Image (tube, rainbow, N blue to C red; front, side):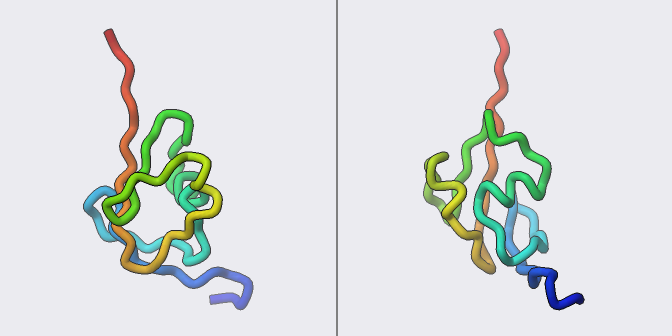
Length: 74
């Protein structure tokens, strides 16, 4: 691993173990996994993270993250 690459950490994302870069915020995680943040809610370790807090909320090793996408219909 190059010195400028972040260390990877293990988290549980929507019930599945996953390795992600160790320096991600909630917003960074959404970008990393390719989720458009407009229509999702994020739960981190069983607590809802408010959207304004996403850029400053760090994902830690072992974090339990649930990303729920809203689906419209009628």
